[in-house]
Figure 1: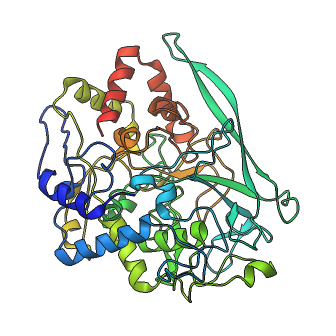
Figure 2: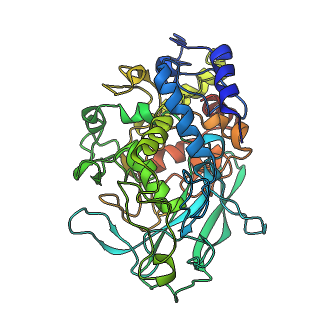
Figure 3: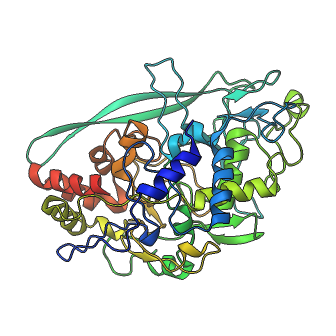
Length: 461
């Protein structure tokens, strides 16, 4: 558990506020998050508050950090601010999966130690007639919860195994990818339906979310080309999702399939699905018809008050983006040029400008997240076959690339893509198919020096 007060103090003294950091040669800008960027590396690189937040926002940030980091416990308990865990859950704290505000790891099939960071979304064919949301399985709900409080039965466990897929670059160098197979094991309430669809989801790093939320909707939609009118093979499109806060359909921005409208709804949804904590946005425990689960004690109604939900939301909105490193390095600049010439920036759009935000320091920021926040068909190799609102089973939101080179610093691993199957940045590139297949093929055609340069650029982000 980190000591936030000391961390914030050190950040305030030692972090460098980057108003600019561009190089004329390649147009690279170290300030990936505009003036909210922090110059940071090491284990706490994802855990610093954005420069420019007010003193009141800093206090709220610290409160939100405590509710994000500390474990929730079963009710009733003397710690009544953090009781109400479960009845079923996947983790006891947000930070159990987003360790140091970073990335989770998938379980190792050869290791008995359970890793927290991967979960199974579940649904059956069809959609809710009002919201358009996926239909939960009638027995196991919308998420497999593999842990439970005393007296309540967990739903089952995640079964993961891997097969190998081999390939080679144009220069003859071979590579090996691991292809996962997912099953529900130890199912507590009968064999899952043959219709059940499993969507594995790995917890990503949570930096810069307030900046992504502040990108104007019109700018996101302007990058969409659902019919591929320009003939470049890229047909990104927005996901229209149901907003619980607005009570109407709206643009999806967050989640692996852009299936969540706002940071607040992402936070509230994770509290319910992952920890079993109710809020005013999600007031009903995920018990189905199980009597033991329905009879379990609660930590209040709701268990996460609106004030506490707001504090965790602001915490998530104001986690700073670390600065890009080595922007003057010719190898980084050459890699950036190869990234663009390979077509990667068609989806991983580098430049955006934020619009109005209730957090003043996030207003009108020139940022470089390397995402368009749109859905793209990534081919059958990455498809989970599970639709989510407008997203098909083969479509995924373009994930932001800022911070990708620091994941190993923060979390001690480099598991990438929606389920962590890729163990390196290179493996993640090689899994790209569908709309991105041409870019992946271009990468395979590069010689070893050019591949290394492109990876050096990505490591600098």
